[in-house]
Amino acid sequence: MKFTPPPASLRNPLIIPEKIMMGPGPSNCSKRVLTAMTNTVLSNFHAELFRTMDEVKDGLRYIFQTENRATMCVSGSAHAGMEAMLSNLLEEGDRVLIAVNGIWAERAVEMSERYGADVRTIEGPPDRPFSLETLARAIELHQPKCLFLTHGDSSSGLLQPLEGVGQICHQHDCLLIVDAVASLCGVPFYMDKWEIDAVYTGAQKVLGAPPGITPISISPKALDVIRNRRTKSKVFYWDLLLLGNYWGCYDEPKRYHHTVASNLIFALREALAQIAEEGLENQIKRRIECAQILYEGLGKMGLDIFVKDPRHRLPTVTGIMIPKGVDWWKVSQYAMNNFSLEVQGGLGPTFGKAWRVGIMGECSTIQKIQFYLYGFKESLKATHPDYIFEESNGFH
Image (tube, rainbow, N blue to C red; front, side, top):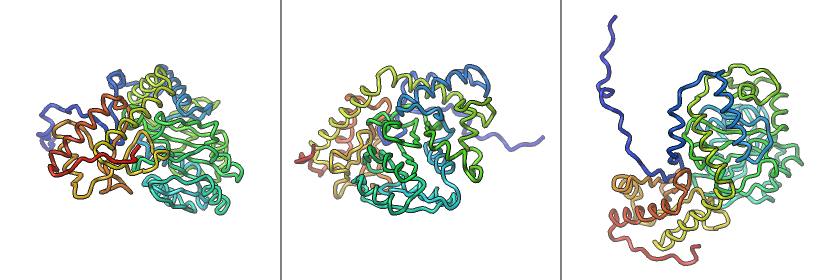
């Protein structure tokens, strides 16, 4: 047998330096979460795996604040959660209304179009949420099967209020789909109380788990819609009837669907355990306190926030406006090279306009916020010596 020679690059040891991950995600994981991934890999029907999956479902119901049995994880990043919801709840010709004021809603538009849906949109500025009245009028006008909303938009740092939306949706026989990737465990979220039909979040964001596994939950009403589809879900991998069966969500014998990433499930279990031990209320209060300290620190530097109205700010992601004449990339590079600090640029509506800082995972402490402010200021001074720091007025 003849083969090409092995790559020289693999002769060297793998070296990954420590970094302070304070962008909009992924975030730093705790040692407890990382250690969980060193457990032995388990096969698909091992009892220990199923027990851990059941514990994960308990934890997810807690953070989603739901009693939904159809609560599980999709293998893949948070985009997989968006794909799973849209591909299961929409069929060819189904009308979906998407509230667009950031990049994630734009992604939902593209995905829905690929599934053959009749996509209708309402558009708003990226720094202001949609009012309940605006959403109600749009639902009445378009009469959609589903409404898609982004709860916390990590491309801008905008928080969309959800209370009352589900009730309006159900008055018009419409399902409410929510992207809670960057918001869950950073602000209050009540799936059942707010009558949300489908939600997904990002394990690698506020939860502080590794990327590659996406928590989701669907209401009994949404599950009935999926069960009564005219055709099967177009994507076998995202089929929530098959996946939910394997996750033990239905009263039926479990069947193999795909090989799950057992070690990511272990890590997510530990991340959820940490949240449960601290309590949701304390988790949320801590991040709101950290965000306030961040706002005050940025104000003392004369820096503005992308979302001007404090009522509409997402505590877990803040857009910092790039001052005129400042090269944002130089600042980000200097922070990484000198402080191992991630200072990430904008995305979608904030690209070239703002940096984005995340208060997620292990970086949700006052100490980390103070370090970020110090490293950010020093990086701005070093790369732009002529920049004048002047305290902003009316900032808080």
